[in-house]
Length: 151
Image (cartoon, rainbow, N blue to C red; front, side, top):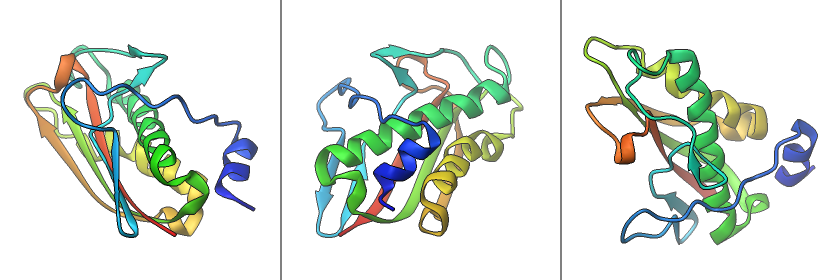
């Protein structure tokens, strides 16, 4: 079974690659790795939500936005290397725009990590950082970077 088959089995369609907001590209392949730029929770070109987690955005909502962001990251990977060439997920870096006192960043970024596990199984187990920040671009609640190994 290919990763494309697995996505279809899960009823997941990769979105179109999100357009960059500044002077960068969505993903770069170097050797056997693909590094994505930070991906926001865009759906069809629109940001799903704005605000800080623990204030305007609930942790449960933010976890869903992390899932959306990782799908955007996978679309970026697909655009430069092909999703079926992924060998394994290496690292996820998640940023959470956090209200003062909010410390649930790991649970929010689990939205991305759990989806990678559903799609890639053992190959989806990865190293990770979940970082709370004061602000993210255009007011997004979550931003995710992804590093994968490819054939």
